[in-house]
Image (cartoon, rainbow, N blue to C red; front, side):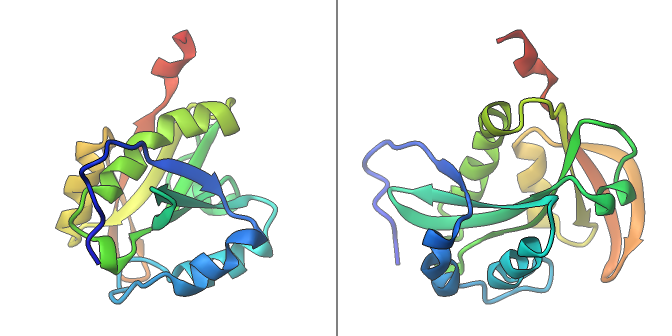
Length: 169
């Protein structure tokens, strides 16, 4: 399904709540080798005080998904305080290649400033073999820290997005 890109709209990031359950159920992620299915991620987040599923909407359509986490899992990536881990990032298979992943990530700094104002950076791990994701994260301002760790499906490069430039606003 192609989304009409003729009208200029902004990506809207919204923290998951039960009213979006059907959208998560209907979300299509055919290739979940590098990312967790959103339905599973939402269920796991419900068992945690430190995980926040985030939905990315374009013209009212759920197009991307990720989880922000401030719990102990973050220590695999950084020991810095005031950081959150971005994980389980995906774009609904029906909307891949339309720029929604980069729009969602580009909306992240403003979303963080509004919803998590004390957070100064977002970290993530990306499989070193997932070249499209690496390019996407770099395009959206994430920097390779030069560090990595061995994850469940191979080496994870550790990327960080500094949010400190928003402090002056």
